[in-house]
Amino acid sequence: MSDIFDIYLLEAVLNGLLLGGLLALLSLGLNLVFGVIDVVWICYAELIMCGMYCVYYLHVQYHWPLILAMLAAIGVVAFLGYILHQFVIRPVLSAEPINQLLVTGGVLFFLQAAATLLFGIEFRNLGVSLPAVHFGEMSFSAPRLIAFGTALGGVVGLYLLLTKTYVGTAIRAISQDRTIMPLMGVDPARIFAITSALGGAFAGLAACLLVLQYDVHPAIGLSFGPITFLICVLGGLGNLVGGFIAAFIFAQFIAVGGFFFALEWGYVIAFIFFIAAMFWRPRGILSK
Amino acid sequence: MLRVANVSAGYAGFQALFDVSLEVNAGESVAVIGPNGAGKTTLLRLISKLIEPSSGELTFEGVSLAPIPAHEVVTRGIAQVPENRRLFPRLTAEENLRMGAFTSRRKYAERLEQVYSLFPRLRERRQQLAGTMSGGEQQMCAIGRALMSGPKLLLLDEPSAGLAPVVVQSILEMVRRICSQGYTVLIVEQNIRLVLKVVSRAYLLDAGRIVQSGTAAELLAAPEIQKAYLGL
Image (cartoon, rainbow over all chains, first blue to last red; front, side, top):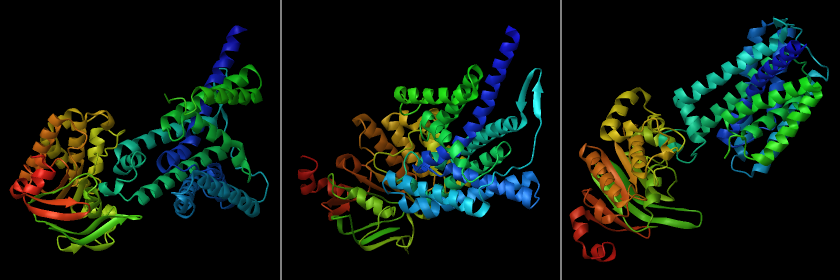
């Protein structure tokens, strides 16, 4: 009896690990944009929704191969990120933070309403079903395994970009001292635009992974937008490493908490942990 | 090489420079000396196009700098070591140097070697975060970062500020070495006595106006300067 108990616990821990990978990827784009531009994209999850619709329509309506539809979606959301920066963020770049929150909040409602008008309120399903993967007596969902692998790939890719390239180094530098960037021959506006497109691309990548597991509808952003923000805040807004670690901690609370009680309780426990952590480390778990 | 002609400039509700003219010729090392708040930093910010003049003209190698945006000044051959060094504290020393080479990536390896041979200390510190280095090492790194773009004109803003007296000596020694390597240097400094031993010519800026100019020896010997700034 005790063997079986252990293997189910192990399964929960491993499922938590897989969920952690997905949550880490979700938080990456938002965290990057905040860390560099110092603006919170409240409408981040709605960009992901746009990406999910993009994959759905290109694949189901226009019969594009799934991989091609996904690559196109990443490109589309990257472009949306760029547009968002140029037309919405740029005019309020030096405005009060509350105004920046309000404009991106406005974009959230705009995108939700536009999606409702254009696509209706039906839940749309990609219709792709990937089999569960079995290891002995444990089973894992294939989309989660794919999401985990892709998320790790995304994190490694971003790390290499930020440390090995000139533009990546400039992205890190600009978050430390914005005003002297012209002395390096760097146009800050260009670095911000690139960062926004990159944040959008990560939202697009997250969309590709989520659309494999969840139905798309105009309000889908509400179901994972808040958790994405919580993870970013838990890790310290703008701190990519902190957000990465926070995603895995949060996912373990959900998975293991859900294992000992019921699935819904997993979320309750995770949120209680979040509230406690905010008293303990209000600036994020890695802060001193 | 650099011509500043009748330039006035300021910030909202405050004029910092009045009708300033000066010239730096190729291969020269020139200082702008003067007390705190005289407008020295404003002058360098103008040349790097971080601020616009309200009147007057700046030309570099015979071409007006007026239509050039700040981030393209470096590609024209003007690099600045800003006041207080302004390194990126959470990048390593070498990453800071890499930022300096942003506009001339193909020459990165070659120039990195030049900077390391000029400042061997930086090679030892290459993987250290810039914010954790000593003041002198940070100043070397900031000068190195500016040299990475291969400038024709190097602007130095108060290289001695905030450094211990012993370190100030060695930094100015390095500046002298850079001048002797054929770089054209415009240096702004409060530490008048020391800087006049390094440069060939100088301008005295006071309350936003050029009040005196001449060779370093002439200024060192000028009674007004001896009385007001050197405390003799």
